[in-house]
Image (tube, rainbow, N blue to C red; front, top):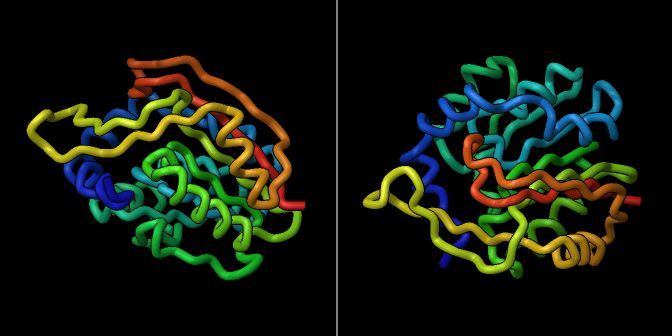
Length: 205
């Protein structure tokens, strides 16, 4: 499994995810992250997808920038965020400038990586955050990784690597962050969440 294997899945299902987001998404997940920041903060939405969280980030007065590897999903994000900068990049090839961001929001994007790759991405994000910068991560909670073909069994797949709280928290702390908050959400099939989710808020001290 390569971490980039999930990109064709999101290209293929871009419209389906956008329709689902429109039906069920709300600012509830991103709000705790935004409460850690001040208006005007420069925020990267890492894996912005259809751009729904980015819309709430910018509505809260943040200088939000979206990044995603899927061209199809970024086209949808542009319709929701016509004035927002959008970057088409695979996370593996994105290296932020040192101290570039006040906050980084990664909502269900890091769990497409193996633990080894995830560690490298988090270390890169640590470098890219300013001192006292905030990292917000939402990942599926669980143990064994799997290939997911939800939506079309004959179509491309995506890799899902669930995490236990101790493992993902330890990885974030080893990169230099201090964990500020851990939260949980139950499994919500009606919202497209096949597993329970973990929210980790951490700060670069």
